[in-house]
Amino acid sequence: MDPIVVFAGTIMQAEMLKSLLEDTEVEAFLKDEAMGTIAPWQASAGGASSVKVVVSKNDYEKAMLVVAEFEKNIE
Image 1 (cartoon, rainbow, N blue to C red):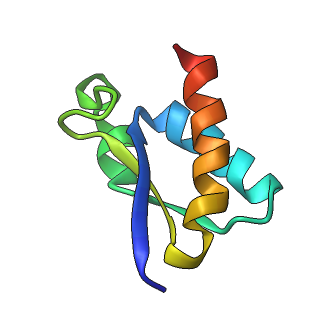
Image 2 (cartoon, rainbow, N blue to C red):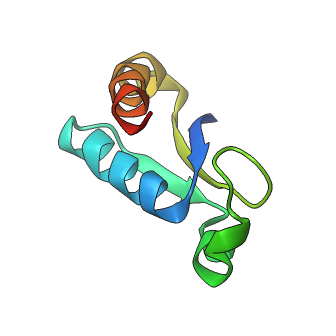
């Protein structure tokens, strides 16, 4: 698997997106999850200590459709 980061944000955002991706049969993983759990106030959306959602290179295009819709709804 060639992992690609498709999103970075708070632990709650990352968990929600991971669930949405898995609902569309895209296997997703969280990176830097511990920091987002231990000190969530430091996990600014996409900034320092953010939690990253990672998918396989093979699922990138399918994942980005879900990510785009998710980001539209969190603005």
